[in-house]
Length: 300
Ligand SMILES: [Zn+2]
Ligand SMILES: [Zn+2]
Image 1 (cartoon, rainbow, N blue to C red):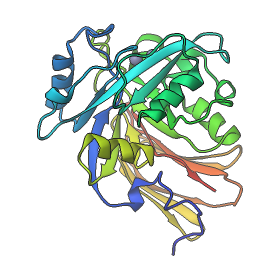
Image 2: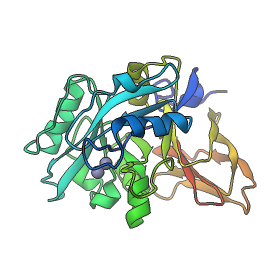
Image 3: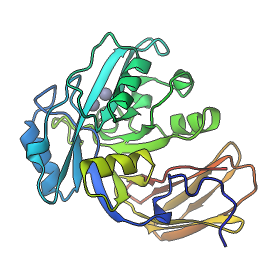
Image 4: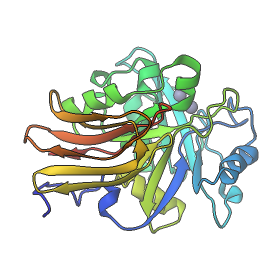
């Protein structure tokens, strides 16, 4: 029996929808900014690694990657924008994914203007690597219109040990409301960051626009390796099924939630009984090698 969740048809749960799964990287750089590979070689790496799509998101510039698509590989235009952030006092890093007519960003834009311009162009604004930036959920409280933040950024993990922004995400969910969590590589082709953080998007629309629309609706989960196979809201509870892992956490507001641990990846399912005070629920799993995966939040 389905619960009375108000938003199960409101996106954020790809396990309750139809469609094929598509693996993609949303954040990487090329020789068009500070990356060490050409756009051609960068896209070819992800295509050869079995990804279904990738976004080239160079600093301050959008590159036309349509010629690099193949029948089995979708390329999506993107950008990483920078400018003064009055909330942190440091430059912001905001991704614009799936922009259509953008060519360059302007370092004079504040963060809200950058977000607004991406939205006006049909794209998705994502707050990049907040932990690495020193950007808190409080710093984001007055910003409006971004679809989510990077819960994992591989290059920030590899080079500074600051890849995981799950606490920032939880603080935002608690204080400000629903937003999506994205895992990305932020590949610069200098640090071995590639292939460590991706999104699994569920859609039957296998086009650049279709992937962007599914991302906007939250019809994806993020991973470094483990798979989330099902998240099912049943009467009075939530049931999760995964590939073999050593930890399954059902994360909720404040003192709510459940945590299951086992050695040697012996867990494949877990349940959480609803107390009614969860406010939100999201799934986080981890395998014996420290690789995690994250579902998007269901709100209560
Ligand atoms: Zn950045
Ligand atoms: Zn970057």
